[in-house]
Image (cartoon, rainbow, N blue to C red; front, side, top):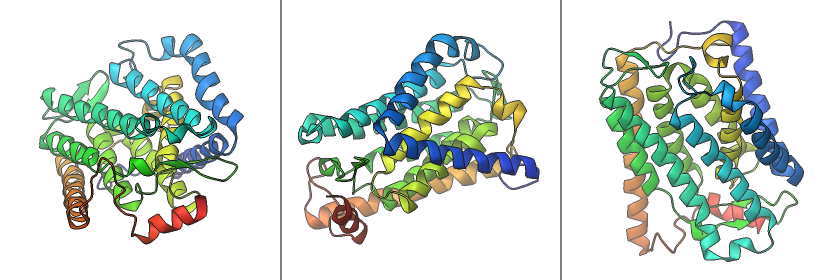
Length: 311
C-alpha cells in the first residue's frame, strides 16, 4: 500500500504511461495542424454527442459520468479548444482586447467549476467516506482548504494583455506571463481537487492528465501552457465520457482512502497558492503595475526567452 495510492501492478503502470504518451501525441496533432484540431475538437465531439454520450453518460449511470459536472467540464474544455483555434487561425484576432479576454475567462470558469465541486463535496457530509453519484468521496476540511486554494489560483491569472500568436507554422497561443509560477500553483490545486472529488480516478485525471500538459509546457513548446491544458483536458474527458468504465474496471488505481493523505495534499495546495499570491502581489506593488492592464513578469528570464523565440 502506498501513501496516496494502492500501488498498481506493472500492467497498470504500462497503461498509465501509454495514456500519457497518447495525450501528448494527440495534443501535438491538434497543435501542429489546423485540420488535426478541427478533427479532434469539433468533428469527434459532435459525433460523440449525438451517437455515444447520451448512452455512456446517461443520468445515474453506475460510473458517475452522468452528473452535471462531467457534462459542464466537457463542453467548457471543448469551448476553450475551439475558442483558442479561432484566435490562432483568424488573422489579427488577438489585436482586439475583447478577444484576449477569452483565455483568462475560460480558465477562471473551469477553476470555478472545480471550486464549486470541492465545496459541494464537503456538503455531502461523507466524513467517513461513501459513494455519492457512484463516485467514492470523503468529505472533510480538505475540501474547504482546496476550494480556497482554487480561488487564490484565479487571483494568480495575470498578463493576459500580452497574449499573442506565435510566428511559427503551428500558430500557438502564447501567454508568456503564465509560466512556472502559475503552473506550479495550478497543478497542485488541480491535483488536490481530483484527489478530493474524483478520488479513485485521480491518478488519471490528476497525475497523468496534469503531466500531459506540464511536460509539453516545459520541454516541447514553452509559453502556451493553457493551450496544452485545454487540449489534453478535452481529450481525456471525451475518452472517459466514451469509456466510463475505464478507471473503475479496466485499469483501476484506487487511493488509500487515508484522511491524512487528503489533508496533506490540500494543505500543500493552499500553502503554495497563498505564497504565490503574496509573491505576485508584492511584484505588482513593487513595480506599480495594474494587473488588469500590465504584464507582471516582463523582467524574468522565462518571459524574455519565450518572446525572443516566438515574436
